[in-house]
Image 1 (tube, helix red, strand yellow):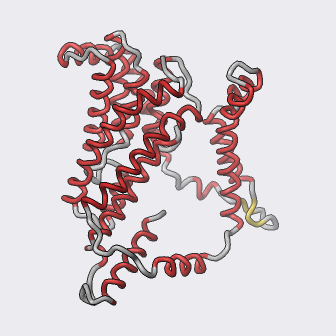
Image 2 (image 1 turned 180 degrees about the vertical axis):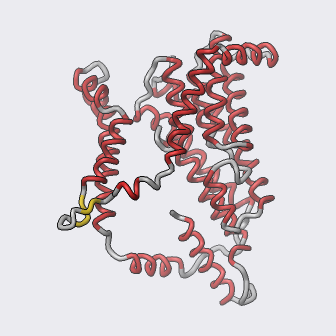
Image 3 (image 1 turned 90 degrees about the horizontal axis):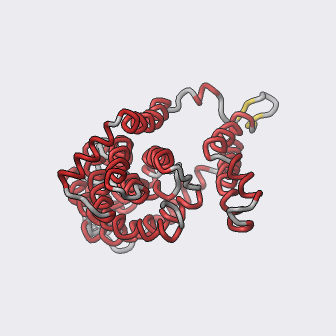
Amino acid sequence: MLLPTALGILVVIAKLMQDRGEVKPDFDPLRLRVGAALMLMLAYGASVGGLLTPVGSPPNLIGRGLIEEATGERISFAQWMAAAAPLCLGMFLILALVMFLLNRPEVRRIEGVEEYIREQKAEHGKMSRAEVNTLVAFGTTVVLWLTPAVASLVAGTDSEVYAFLDDRLDEGIVAVLGASLLFILPTNWKERKATLTWTDAAKIDWGTILLFGTGIIFGALLAETGLAETIGNAASDSLGITSIVAITAFSTLLAILISETTSNTASAAVVVPIVIPLCTAMGLDPFVPALAATFAASFGFMLPVSTPQNAIVYGSGAVPIIRMIRTGLVFDILGAALIIALLPLMVGLVGIGG
């Protein structure tokens, strides 16, 4: 969604440099160093921002499902956000600071961006009825997701109100309800035309949705057949891992490594089912290592195949592959260190896990 805006900003920067005589009139805006930084920040920011909620990315859904199945403890929407927020904030600060050190911008101040944004806003016009309906459906979904958490803060987790809401406002049910509103809210009542039609819904990537479920089934089968326990015992014996810190570091690095060579969804589906029995074999609580692997699955920053976000910005032509690898390697290391250092603390403060 934001790629066209970012490309438009690059055109404004290139025009500014042309007016100053710093580049030739036929200069390609995609060759700007700041362009690479802007595109990479767009991709990395989307990956990091997806960690903030349980439904923000496919690895979150898979990892959360596997952790809840293995530990029997439910992670609420608010608990997830409370644990993930410091990680997201810390990583955003690291991204902003380091990104421009590795890709120093050609200009310090951009003139004309505000005018460009105003022109785009004027061209877009007022919000359409379909846009308003979508905002209503999205707002309703978020409010219902957070209602049990608000009830727990006001009445406590032992109250009947919280138990009632928590049992009935399951995230999956709320998501289906919010999506259903799009089939009900009309854009043209006379023509009985709704915001979303099944013709539009049929274009949804249903294969990806099936992949989510497949990841959870894959993890369950690993546990039921005993393969995951075998892998866990073998890894424990060969690697000599004996502490919760070591297994958290191992799961984080393994998830990032696999995410670089495959998709972040596949990384979560493979690593989390291995980490849980490994912890069980060692007599350790699997909550923190499994959650660390879930978060780390979204931290594949080096290659276009790591995440769809990386692939999209690489396809823009503004990011050379060498620059993506160099920048991504730095953020892989910094992201892993942040997860290993901060996640156990946040899980303890939030009060989830064993």
